[in-house]
Length: 378
Image (cartoon, rainbow, N blue to C red; front, side, top):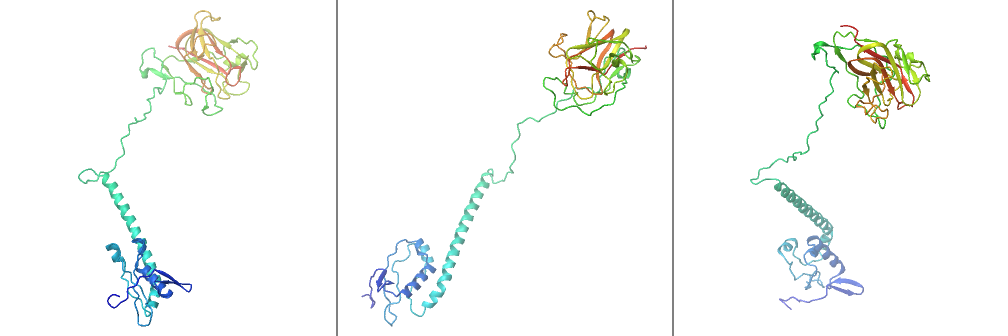
């Protein structure tokens, strides 16, 4: 007995006749009390184990209708969250039942809002820390700059290929004393040159796929093709196709019947100019129906018809000396309507001999035309 009120401790749950009562309170009041506590407390976050001292409170009509927890919340925060328990009477039971569900939803929403706010605050603080790390002392923000590249800039090598090939002039090197050699070229039957170079073929990559520039010779030489109509002999006395006179007939078009075909392997043909000539340029066309490469092309001049004495080699692209004339320094080339221009630069000779050893297309040796430009005036 305390202050006229009966203080009595009971276990929180008592079973009477199969019904579960909270501290001797009716089941209806128990549920109302539970909803009230959920609406204002969420007590389990702050005190996992509760000890109650229940005080039955009489409402004048019999058994007590409420319980009062005698243990206060454990901290000030909890005190703010918890509403003080008060006696429950029959008149406010319906009101508690109606408001309990809404209160529970409110608490859940409030908790979610608090958690989201905490997460956003944490992220904001973390980003501020990152930004602060990018600032130098004094608080001045420095714009981020990419590190300077240490890789050297790629530069294109300067080309050393002249715009036009100019042999040394007899009277001087002045361009005013030079003139372009006019050439009568056949019609091309294909355009361009192959991008894929056959294995073992040594091509001048600076010239590959480009038109030949104009060729300059000294003025006043009055150069003419002195091989036109001249006699032709060969290592193959009986050509497979055509006749040897086709080589100096002036027809250099890439058509069937316009070229002579010699036997496979290493072969030569020879032109007799009739007398010793001051030779400046030799033009050579093999079969240029397609862009093939002829092997071991060697061009020699001499005054000896047997080419045993006084032989001068003016062109040699035999890079492995398979023909026996030494390792050549000239490049191999794809056949084209332009032909191959071979500078001779005024050397004296009567005979011109051309060697070959098959091509990338087949083992035969073909010649369409050979022109020899020699001085005729001055």
